[in-house]
Image (cartoon, rainbow, N blue to C red):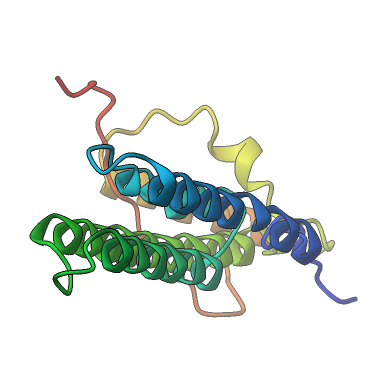
Length: 182
C-alpha cells in the first residue's frame, strides 16, 4: 500500500497562481516609484514581495520573487539616477533585498526539510498498519527540556511500533521561549 504524504507539499497550481500577488506588487511599486516625485522613494516596499512569498511558495518561488525584486530595484535606481550608475541609497536597498531574499530562501529550505522529516514520523506504522498519530500524541506534552522530550517521544514511538523500528530514525528537538521580546 503506497504511503500518501498529504500536507507535505502545497498544491502546485495554487502556489503558482498565488505568485501573481508578489509579482504584481513588484510591478506596481516599481511603476509608482518611477512616476512619483524624486523625493518620494517607494523602492523599500519591494521587500514585501519576497516576505509574503513563503506563505504559499517554496525556496524556488522565494528565490524567483527575490531576484525580481532586486532587478526591479536596480531598474528603479538606474532610471532615477541616470547621471550615476547607482546611488549609495539604491545600493543599500539592493543589498538589503539580496540579504532578505537569501535569508527567506534558507528558511524555506529548512522548513521543507522539517516537513519531510515530520511526514516520515507521521507514517511510522505499527504491526496492524495503524499510523503513529504524531499530533494527537504530543499535543499535551509539557516537557521544557529537549532531551526529556526526545526520551519520551522515542519511548512513545517504540511503544507504538511494538519495540523495534524497522528503519533509521533521527530526532531533533529545539527549545524555544514563549516570552515576548521587548
